[in-house]
Image 1 (cartoon, one colour):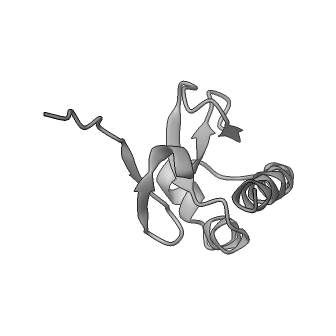
Image 2 (tube, rainbow, N blue to C red):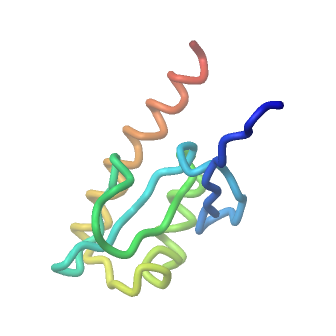
Length: 99
């Protein structure tokens, strides 16, 4: 008799696909109303998830879906910072898949 381990599922806020939590990137609103990437997945604060693809990052940031789900307003500087950090995440995701 095999025991199946529970795999947490989350939904990408941009494309609405349900995936394993580890396949997505968590964004979290911290106490000073800024939004940052939570690479550990354990930071305190309101969180949302995005796929590691450029399309999802653009859709999430430009359409205001991230702001809506996190109940925060992104400053232009904060938005630019997230775009730059997101680029590194989906570049790592692409290189990790090709191995």
